[in-house]
Length: 600
Image 1 (cartoon, rainbow, N blue to C red):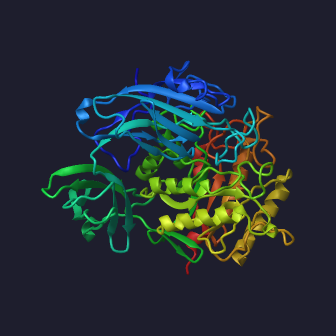
Image 2 (image 1 turned 30 degrees about the vertical axis):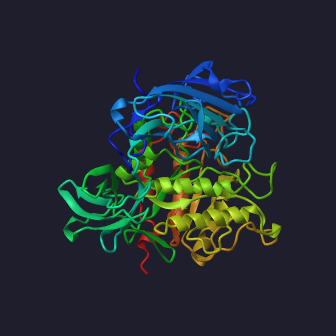
Image 3 (image 1 turned 120 degrees about the vertical axis):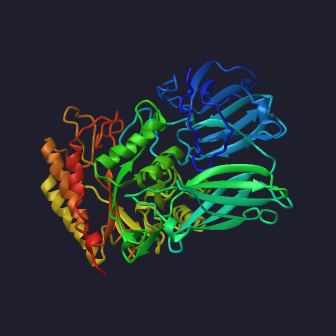
């Protein structure tokens, strides 16, 4: 039987030796989370599941849609003897939500967070040539105040909340490493001087050890540099590209350089090595303009939530990730908001290869400072720690042009300083501390709380049942942008929910959302539904034109790429079928935006 999702899961830090553990695992639902007391840790489990698909998905073979307070996994693995005297790492790319891992009966790791990877070191418990019995418990209480994106709080999908994901939902794998080894580096491009700054990560230091970075293209080595690894756990080098070999990464030409990273000892013997890639790309702010490589690029984004009929939040194949990008580009979009989950890193790999710009986001829709009963997920310090893990994983991807840690938070400023303020400022400060090279929102839509955030935005749908009236109101709202008064969600003089706009670059990061499925009266979109497909095209053109015409808007984001469960406002069906004339949608979006024509 072939291994599902067999591709290497960490494309920007690859080693040669690894073992994919996807496929059949023992599995058992622990409805009362009493497994420890019932001895589940020391016995075989009652069922089976296909990893990396969550038990709610049909691809898992379980297809259980009800709430699961806890689930257990068990797998016996023979660690390859040919890995010699190296130490063994057990990687989980994502497990939702609160995870404990035992190997050979020993508890080795705990991790909180459903979107980000973690690594279990098997030192002293199992090594090359040994048998490792891996047991994992994932707790995912459905009504706990944890970041969970758009996962439904009810049995069924409803409104804009969808089928839940519990347990393992991305690749599980083993990897051998030496005792002194490389960690994932940070690679920062500098377009101004044509260089890359490479900061290595090391597990520890040894006298005489050195690190080396080599940058290459198809013609061969472009630049190389090395430095001592003896004194610093984060030694760094600069790779300067000769002018004749400089080539920018862009939407039109997504050129990528190969990077080889090596750790050597005092005699020059290679201790550890890995390969990566990078793109020479800059993002800058010039007044209300956002520039890529010094050029204004209107960001024609689509909202992509990354759900699949058969895999829920997990793509059925690697090709499905690539296809979603190609589908978006075919409709005229040049990028996406990767909405309400941290997407698989393989998606970013394809975005890097295809010249597709994206905003990295966390999964935390509907959070506020009011407490249980008033929000979909209550804010706490764990949002900041989990977001830092996402930043660390995705920092090197050139396709990412901005960060969005929160989405549609909501609370009145008159309530005083609350946990919403603390977490919003904390996540924004964490973003800027980790990455000074990209702009960031404090939140997408609604309760902006950082006065001088890099970017300001709003979500603006035509909600009126009379579309003609709605379009007129929409046009008038957006026309205020050029007067320095962009539309702000929930803006009332008596009870504002956002700090005032401070002149930053501005965009409407959600709009449109028109339903198109005349055969289904139970599904929904935003506002009234078009009665004919020609009426849909006219609406799509109307709202795109309103935003393209504003000289102080640097982009927009249309809702959304595909239908999802009861929400049928996608450009494509949930099964990725075609609903519209894509050439027509692309033509509507292809006209120059006012900000691209603005001379100042």
